[in-house]
Structures are given as C-alpha cells and as structure tokens.
Length: 243
Image (cartoon, rainbow, N blue to C red):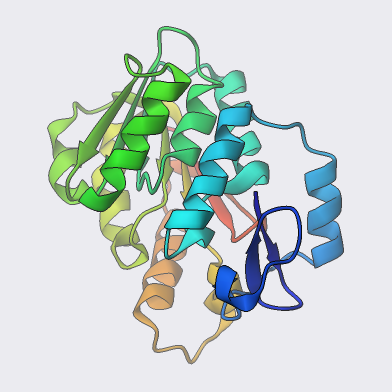
C-alpha cells in the first residue's frame, strides 16, 4: 500500500519507508488538512473492500501520478453517498485507474448502472482488470474518449449522481454540459475544487486554478443549485440540482 508523507514529500510504496528511487516525489502537493488530522481521520474511517487496496498498490507501483487516485477517505465518502442516495444512474468524468468508480459501485443498488469516461487509453487495461475482478462488469460501462464528446450522447435528466474529476481547465465547460443531464434532486460532486489551496491566490496565472475559480463561482451563482464546498482532501464542491 502507498502513503503520502508530507514531511519528506514522497509517496512510499509498502509498509515501510522506501528509498527515494522507489518513491514518487510529491513535494509540490500541499495537503490542506494537517497530517495528524488526516491520519486520525483515516484511522477512524471504515475500510473499503480489499480489492481497492490491491488497486491502490498497483496504481502506486505503475502510475507516474498516483496522487490522482481518490484514496480511502474520499472513496468511503463516495461509497456512503451512494448508499444514502441509492442512485439508479451514475456518471463519472475521469476514471484514472478506477478506484473512485469501484468505491461508488460497491455502494450503489444492485440494479444501478455507472458510466465512467476516461480520456487516456493507457488506463483502459488496469480499469477493465479491476472492474472484472470486482464483479461489476455488468454494472459499469467504461468509455475511452473525450468527455465533451460523450456527455451530449446521454439523455437529459438521466443521472442521479455525477462525480467530476477530470482536466480542471474544462470544469466550467463540463458543468455546462452536465447540469442538463442531472435529474432534479440529483447531486454533482467535483473533486479538486480547492486545488491545494491555490484558489485563494488572487494573482495566479495558472490555467487550472483560473478555471477552478471560475467553476466555483459559476456553481455558487447558479440559482438552480444548492451547494456546499467542503474543505475535504483537495476540496469537494457538492451541488444539488433544485429544478
């Protein structure tokens, strides 16, 4: 299993510290939550199925950017949201290696269906591997394509839950495309809404940060939603469609 050590700036693979050559440099990543609080929260959060731990380890070993994986806290949060909402149809934008998709799948009703879109074809093998191993082949549809090309293919008012975790520069566009697809009372959850705290920088020239700030403002000023921005992990913007 891998873990992030804010002190050294590395992700360590295995139960003990590895040498820097066996680690992933994460020095540029700012953890919004203090380390001790993160560790306490993790220790007091129920474990997800063992196959997700296996997927997490393989992601850390093989991916050049393992920090993109949702992880236990966020995975369990998404799982609980699905258990509470009992969504019939779920859409995920940005599959990565499949951790968040499977976290939701383990919490959704038996007859529900999850559609997940991933732009990177290099991820397809590991995604399909774990969808099959987890037994959700009939309940999860994977699409390898640009999300902006796939989203319009769905009917309006089709999804009960949407999880957005894709390229940040296109968050405003995705919001415009996704909201008509969300049912009244449905919820959109967008990851990385705080971008390691960079959204409070008024002088930023970073394209991702500028797009995220625009996205957050769009959601905040949208009269058709009730929203809350959670300072959880890297920020989760949650918006319920009111009409």
